[in-house]
Length: 75
Image (cartoon, rainbow, N blue to C red; front, side, top):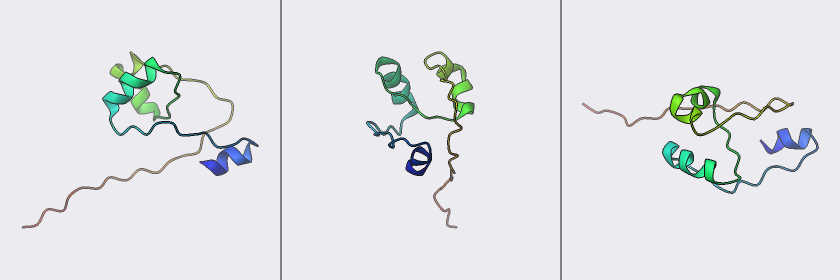
């Protein structure tokens, strides 16, 4: 992500909070001046849409890859 901001001539954002809980995020962000990066799918969810609003940005944001990891099942 830092490379994306450098390309735009901007310093990378300071990450002030890392939140691994969706419900904690929904409690913190509306009560602070923090900005959160979440997927469009999550933003459109009825629970999220009740608490957060999208911000239109001129420049496209970099994409992120996600992985699903689960515990192996041994038989």
